[in-house]
Length: 184
Picture 1: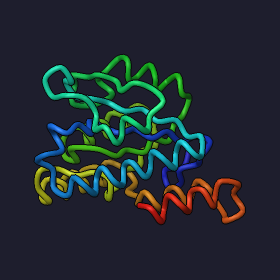
Picture 2: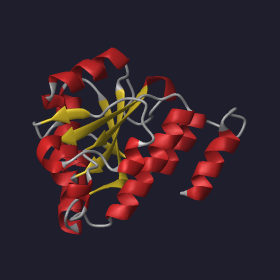
Picture 3: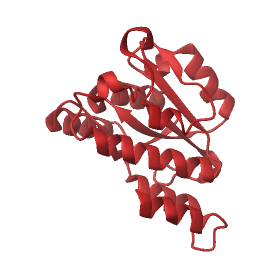
Picture 4: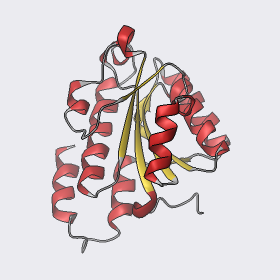
């Protein structure tokens, strides 16, 4: 299994804890939401599964409405900081039979990093989109990105992944995805 490419047929997108109560304190939160939403929209168009999580939603509230509106399935409620710590998450991920995981969400240095490390330790190839993850400070974000990269996670821009999934301008969804690129 290559950790350098993210084949469409084996990819799954995980959106981690994009909840307004958390987003309020996040550096460049509007960009995180916008880029996450773009990737989710493109993934849906390209028939790539998406899982989303909510950290302690009874206390921290539910998913960002603009993200929630793009989903076909309910977010997974979790208490563990790593998504992999949730049995429901593991079950849905395993049921997808996808082994290339793309991460977006918050916070880079906590939930995103811990999820990435757990996934790698359990045999997944992991990609993170630096334009669609962040933390409360840029320093926390950078440290989280460095730790993930040092752990074997491959950073990739959301747009780069979408073009990789299509492969060429001959892809049947190219024009529709290009509209999403221009809107984002």
